Image (cartoon, rainbow, N blue to C red; front, side, top):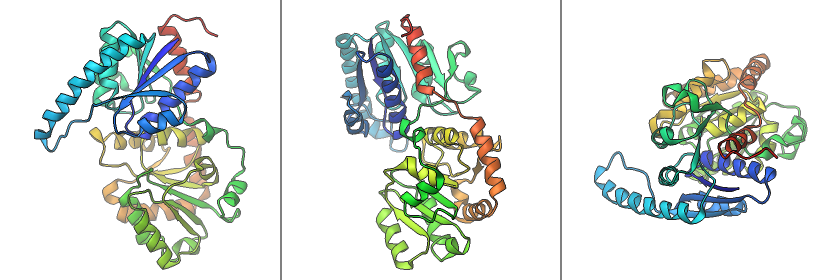
Length: 369
């Protein structure tokens, strides 16, 4: 089988794409898989590092604030469409899979025009523009949230959930062992604060304003704080200066499987991939949606959980005043954390990558192996 997988821009698009590719390879080791990304975006490094070939398109996103810059964007889009058509013609895929992001638009549109079967994987509770534009020509649309019939043809929708990094589910450490591996006291609860690889300034500022004065130690818990790269030096300097007890600040957590296993409560952004990970692991969570994303989809993702009692939602604009009171309330209340854990676990969609590959096989009329 020859598979074209397109999309990227963020880890939230790249990790599902790699998970789908891995599930295809497990089922059919000889499958030929080609990724298509956007030049200069993170997929151009992450995909080859995972062992797959990738081709870059010169496509970029529209600038909604400085409209005059979009002449260049349109030129890049035209070049990307030409390159995508040639890719489809030369590679001759049996199916093209789009996971969202700049590159998936030209690639999937070219595949659809060439009569190639296409499958869309929509991570969010509110679809992006690209997937909405491609939906009419898609053979299948795999989603992670209910209610997307408002945006997509109902007969094409299949609830599969979002694929996540396999190593997160394979961690064999106990909670106590994971805390010890990270250098924490196994007997004390651990708060994990993570704003993504680039960080989240409002979350970081809430930590600085509330957690570095000894309140973490006084509250009887510990804090593992991923500051992110963009704000990391400032946060680390402040943490070192204040010599906060039971607090560890780091720009990046390489062993997220261990960190998740150790956590008793998580504070995080509300990206679709992050939420899927938290659901599958059953982690009690406070979500602080980023306001700087297209169509405010992180808030909608978070509301899909908070309205079901599966997470606590704190708006980004309220983080300075409301986040830490919620943290301290939950860290002091194991029963409330257990209730959140039970509710979020109910929303988990398991074996998502394998279920998406099932749909790929149906679309390509291939016998199950």
